[in-house]
Length: 124
Image 1 (spheres, one colour):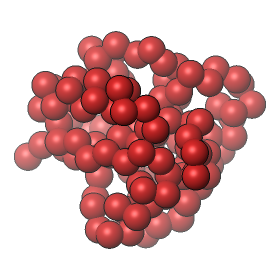
Image 2 (cartoon, helix red, strand yellow; image 1 turned 90 degrees about the vertical axis):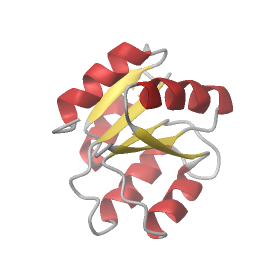
Image 3 (spheres, helix red, strand yellow; image 1 turned 60 degrees about the horizontal axis):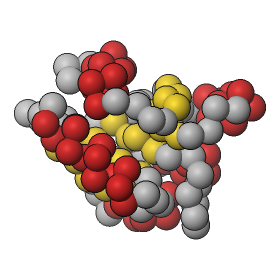
Image 4 (cartoon, one colour; image 1 turned 180 degrees about the vertical axis):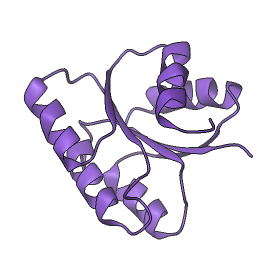
Protein backbone atom coordinates (compact mmCIF):
# COMPACT_ATOMS: atom_id res chain seq x y z
CA UNK A 1 0.00 0.00 0.00
CA UNK A 2 1.31 3.47 -0.85
CA UNK A 3 2.40 5.68 1.99
CA UNK A 4 0.60 9.01 2.29
CA UNK A 5 2.66 12.17 2.60
CA UNK A 6 1.18 15.50 3.64
CA UNK A 7 3.03 18.39 1.97
CA UNK A 8 2.53 21.77 3.67
CA UNK A 9 3.94 24.76 1.77
CA UNK A 10 2.60 28.15 0.74
CA UNK A 11 4.44 28.06 -2.58
CA UNK A 12 2.22 26.48 -5.25
CA UNK A 13 5.29 25.81 -7.42
CA UNK A 14 7.06 24.02 -4.57
CA UNK A 15 3.94 21.95 -3.81
CA UNK A 16 3.57 20.94 -7.47
CA UNK A 17 7.20 19.94 -7.81
CA UNK A 18 7.22 17.97 -4.52
CA UNK A 19 3.93 16.26 -5.39
CA UNK A 20 5.30 15.26 -8.81
CA UNK A 21 8.56 13.77 -7.45
CA UNK A 22 6.82 11.98 -4.60
CA UNK A 23 4.08 10.52 -6.80
CA UNK A 24 6.69 9.32 -9.30
CA UNK A 25 8.32 7.50 -6.39
CA UNK A 26 5.04 5.76 -5.58
CA UNK A 27 3.77 7.89 -2.69
CA UNK A 28 0.27 9.30 -2.32
CA UNK A 29 0.30 13.05 -1.66
CA UNK A 30 -2.11 15.34 0.16
CA UNK A 31 -1.30 19.07 0.17
CA UNK A 32 -2.01 22.14 2.30
CA UNK A 33 -1.06 25.78 1.73
CA UNK A 34 -0.25 26.58 5.36
CA UNK A 35 -0.38 25.17 8.89
CA UNK A 36 -4.04 26.13 9.38
CA UNK A 37 -5.15 24.16 6.28
CA UNK A 38 -2.93 21.26 7.30
CA UNK A 39 -4.41 21.16 10.82
CA UNK A 40 -7.93 21.22 9.34
CA UNK A 41 -7.06 18.21 7.17
CA UNK A 42 -5.47 16.35 10.08
CA UNK A 43 -8.41 17.05 12.38
CA UNK A 44 -10.70 16.01 9.51
CA UNK A 45 -9.19 12.57 9.65
CA UNK A 46 -6.40 12.29 7.08
CA UNK A 47 -3.68 10.02 8.44
CA UNK A 48 -0.38 10.78 6.74
CA UNK A 49 2.56 8.42 7.16
CA UNK A 50 4.89 11.41 6.98
CA UNK A 51 4.57 15.20 6.92
CA UNK A 52 6.79 17.59 4.97
CA UNK A 53 6.39 21.18 6.08
CA UNK A 54 7.80 24.55 5.11
CA UNK A 55 8.75 26.81 8.04
CA UNK A 56 7.95 30.31 6.77
CA UNK A 57 4.25 30.38 5.84
CA UNK A 58 1.36 32.79 6.40
CA UNK A 59 -1.43 32.13 8.97
CA UNK A 60 0.42 29.34 10.76
CA UNK A 61 4.11 28.75 10.11
CA UNK A 62 5.91 25.43 10.28
CA UNK A 63 7.14 25.76 13.88
CA UNK A 64 3.61 26.33 15.22
CA UNK A 65 2.26 23.67 12.90
CA UNK A 66 4.76 21.09 14.23
CA UNK A 67 3.81 22.01 17.82
CA UNK A 68 0.06 21.68 17.04
CA UNK A 69 0.39 18.50 14.97
CA UNK A 70 2.40 16.79 17.72
CA UNK A 71 -0.42 17.53 20.16
CA UNK A 72 -2.95 15.57 18.08
CA UNK A 73 -3.61 11.99 19.11
CA UNK A 74 -2.04 9.55 16.67
CA UNK A 75 0.48 12.05 15.32
CA UNK A 76 3.06 11.79 18.06
CA UNK A 77 5.25 9.35 16.16
CA UNK A 78 4.62 10.37 12.53
CA UNK A 79 7.89 11.63 11.01
CA UNK A 80 7.79 15.38 10.31
CA UNK A 81 10.43 16.81 8.02
CA UNK A 82 10.95 20.56 7.83
CA UNK A 83 11.74 21.58 4.27
CA UNK A 84 12.77 25.21 4.20
CA UNK A 85 15.08 27.93 2.93
CA UNK A 86 15.77 28.63 6.62
CA UNK A 87 19.19 27.35 7.65
CA UNK A 88 19.35 29.12 11.00
CA UNK A 89 20.51 26.82 13.79
CA UNK A 90 18.15 28.35 16.38
CA UNK A 91 15.09 27.62 14.21
CA UNK A 92 16.38 24.13 13.57
CA UNK A 93 16.85 23.47 17.30
CA UNK A 94 13.38 24.82 18.07
CA UNK A 95 11.78 22.61 15.41
CA UNK A 96 13.67 19.57 16.73
CA UNK A 97 12.62 20.34 20.30
CA UNK A 98 8.97 20.53 19.19
CA UNK A 99 9.20 17.19 17.46
CA UNK A 100 10.55 17.63 13.92
CA UNK A 101 12.24 14.44 12.77
CA UNK A 102 14.56 16.14 10.29
CA UNK A 103 15.45 19.41 8.59
CA UNK A 104 16.16 19.86 4.88
CA UNK A 105 17.29 23.12 3.34
CA UNK A 106 15.72 23.99 -0.04
CA UNK A 107 16.33 23.42 -2.83
CA UNK A 108 16.25 19.65 -2.32
CA UNK A 109 16.27 17.40 -5.36
CA UNK A 110 13.54 14.77 -5.70
CA UNK A 111 15.97 11.85 -5.42
CA UNK A 112 17.62 13.28 -2.32
CA UNK A 113 14.23 13.91 -0.72
CA UNK A 114 13.01 10.38 -1.41
CA UNK A 115 16.24 9.00 0.07
CA UNK A 116 15.65 10.94 3.32
CA UNK A 117 11.99 9.89 3.42
CA UNK A 118 13.01 6.23 3.08
CA UNK A 119 15.42 6.66 5.99
CA UNK A 120 12.77 8.03 8.37
CA UNK A 121 9.72 6.15 7.11
CA UNK A 122 9.85 2.41 7.75
CA UNK A 123 8.59 0.37 4.81
CA UNK A 124 8.57 3.29 2.34
